[in-house]
Length: 106
Image 1 (cartoon, rainbow, N blue to C red):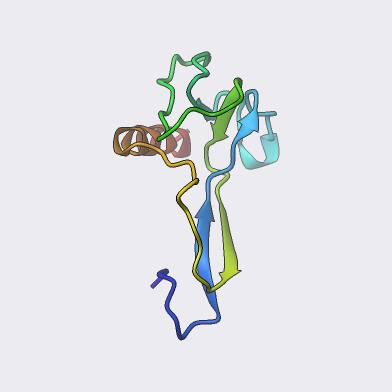
Image 2: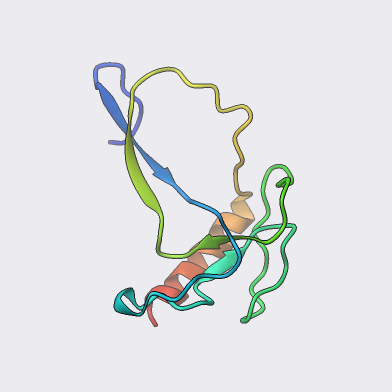
């Protein structure tokens, strides 16, 4: 279970990082330049992938989510205010999962 339970000292959190520009290829991990998804307002992508939409506009352009490079971290269990967090829309979450599946099969 990955919920912030009060009797647990730490909780597990998944982080989906953003980067400026397309991927830098990493051949030993089979990571290719186009294995990323543009995040709105960015719209350019070599495979014409649809931009991920967030609950609010990013203050920067040229941002991409690198596929297959999510992070899993442990944080101390405590109350946190996520009211200013950026979140993907439900539709974008499904779109990103589709792109992740396509990249994982390559």
